[in-house]
Every structure is written in C-alpha cells, then in structure tokens.
Image 1 (cartoon, rainbow, N blue to C red):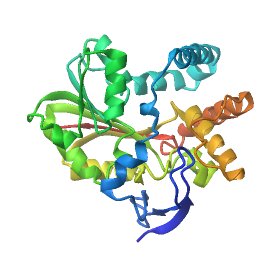
Image 2: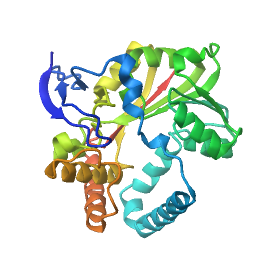
Image 3: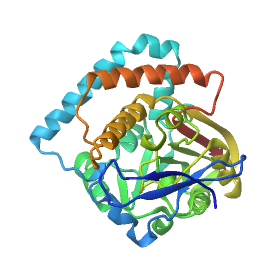
Image 4: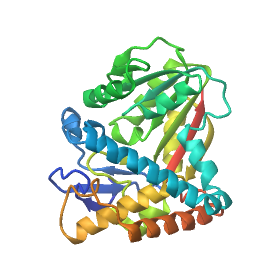
Length: 317
C-alpha cells in the first residue's frame, strides 16, 4: 500500500465523502490512486451532474457563444508571449491530439464526451467514430452534431469493433477514469490497424500545478479520477499492453485551465463548500494569476519535461 498523500473532497460536483488518495512508493512509478475507490457498479452515479449532461436553452447557448468569443479574444491578446513560450503550438497539437502529421483516416475517440474533437477531425477529412458510456453525453453530442458523427453509447470493450479497424485511437482525459487502464489499452491495440497510433492525454501528478496546489489541484477531481499517472507509470501501462512507445511527455497547453480550476477548488476549501469548482464565476484576477502560472510552467518545461499539467502518451501498434 502506498503512502497517504491527500484526503480529498469532491470540490467539483459535491459527491459526499472523503476520498483517501495514495501515492506509489516505487520511485520508478509514482502514480497515485483513490483507496478505497468507488465500486465499479457505482461509477456511473458520479457523473449525474457532469459537464456533458448540460442541456443548453437559448440563454445558455448565447452565454456559451459569448464565452467562446471571449476566449478567442484571450488567445489573440496572449498570442505573442504564447508563441514565444511554445504554448500556441502546444495548444494546436493537443487540440488535434497530435495527429497533424498523419493523413486523414479512421479515428476512434474513446470517451468522446460532447463530440467536439470528432467534429473537428471530421472537418479535416477524417472518418470519425466515438464511444462513451454516458448516455447523456452521447445524446447531447447527437443533438449538437446530428448524424454526421458515428457515436455509440457503450464502452470500448462492449462496442465489439473488429480487429484492425482504426488508423488512430484517441483518449483525452479518459484513462484516469477507468478501473483497469492496462485492459483499456489492450483493447485499443486490438482495434488499431498495424502501425496505427494511440494518443492518450491525462493529468500528470508530477506537474507544477499539483506541487503548488496539493489537494486543491484541479487534476485530482476525486472521486471520478481513480488514478493519476506519472509519465513513467503511463509508459509502463503502454508496455504492458504491448505497444511500442513513440513518445511520452507533458504539456502546459491547458495549464491556465488547470490553474484556474485549482484556484476555484482552493476558494471552495477555504469557504468549506463543495460542488462549486465547476461553476466559479469569471474572476479577472484569478484569470491573470492562472495565465502567469501557465507562463511559468512553460518556462520550467524547458528544463523539466515532467512538470506539465497533462501527460501525453503517443504509441504505435
């Protein structure tokens, strides 16, 4: 049993309870996990108020569009320092899950959520398929994108795709949610074509943000995140699933989001509240502080490739 690192509360959606979080004692691993973890049969209950469950009325749709415009303005205003620090390129890479060097083919997104990534890839010429165990996520994605995407309400193993079906399998912030990560990667390898690519992104427990915010780090998200990986632990999972690892690294592309969420969790902890982390109102000072921390992380990455908020695994079958 690993050492107790944190005792966590759900600052995102207010699921009751304290969730002990342990850290592997092996220096070659260093991953963390919830102990005890939620029962597998109860995991679906943790997502009843998840982001993908939100139906938008006309006012909410307007606010979403306004936020989108504000974010575009934010990206434009920070373009120069972001370009200098490599963040603009990092955002482009992670937005397209590191597929920019491949010709369009068949892509499977595991845990496709609202379908946004698949929609982007389809516009670039990819044949897009997604699976998600959450029926509300699939329903909302189909409402937004119609029948243009192939979306299945199931998990990967129950989808029963034929062997060698896809050129690419992607998993954006999925592997931390599943009880058996290696089994998930083994199934992903089965459905990949020979030479096909797997791309995984997930929170990185060795990140600068976790070091700074500790139990209020946004990437912990107890009790939905069952384990949090290091780069070394993620690489070992890939090897156990018989992948050839092309690259494993970390990214600061979304560090401002991680930092902003962490500031929200910290405020919720200080006020002894829960369920507020996902609904924090816009705070200009918090936004500036989050941006400055992102810049600091981008500079740190130049000498410490392990300190980015997100771990990135790129494998080949």
